[in-house]
Image (cartoon, rainbow, N blue to C red; front, side):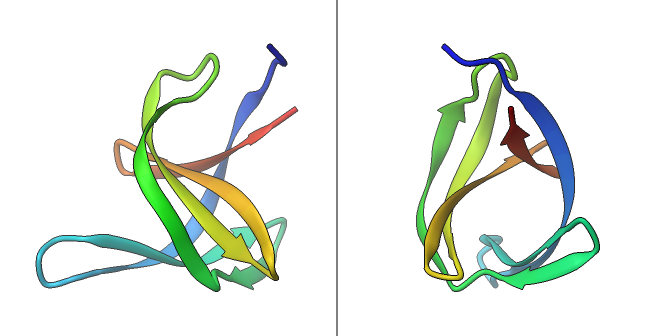
Length: 78
């Protein structure tokens, strides 16, 4: 299994009336990327990082994994 590290990122998100959490924009290295679609959401074990809520998102036509854990967002980096 490959080694990864958490890279905490800024996310602009929206809460729905039932408490659902929707990430809308990912801010990475001072650039803002709109999240085009949320493809799937489920709990996930993330390599060496424990369990988080995994948002499989589409950004600029490509699938990306965005994790939410205890009030913070992160991506996995090699």
